[in-house]
Length: 285
Image (cartoon, rainbow, N blue to C red; front, side, top):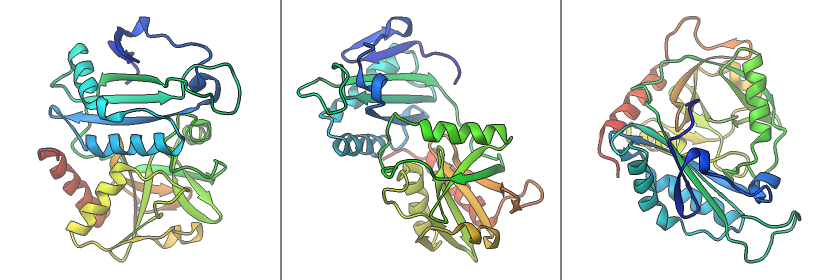
């Protein structure tokens, strides 16, 4: 994932990545005024592509950027072909900003948005067998975490903090309750019941989060969308993360609390990992 892509789709052109350039007055550059989406291609088809594009459209509506996402499926195919990745497992990154205008906080009128997309080879393991170590920290971000925005400073600061603690992910605590990770959603299990923060403005309603809730319903695993308090972490039986590239990953440790002393995975987590793998191997809807 550290390599640059072969091609970039910028506005109406597919370009070599070296030739893809934007104005220094693009509001995405000046303000982080834009939204983004990440989709995986697995076995030659987009995995829950419609759901990802629908969320992109919803986020654009929330910040009042007028952009037609119905054109993107064809553009994704064109970019995959130009990048020689039509049949290869890949990661697709899409970004839309408010466009180019003189720097001013209020939204400019009638400014065309800037659209950018690239794709890189990316192969997910069948199951994410990493047993994750977590560090927690106060949720100092803004109050519209439901928008998948490009201005991710709070998230990257948190993730850098986790890396310096030699842990895999940072999980936020807001008003005494667990919200989400810096780039993932978090679930807990107690007595066979799954708990996760409700999909409100304090978290991003991850597509993988939605898939896992759907899988719980199909497997007759009870789900309660209720925030777990920080003080109750220690009484939970299991915990796991979800995300597009994280998939379903067991949490071994949160701060000083250990769920497992070895590389075991909890019963419910393992069941959901297997169900998620089965889903990936089926034709996507």
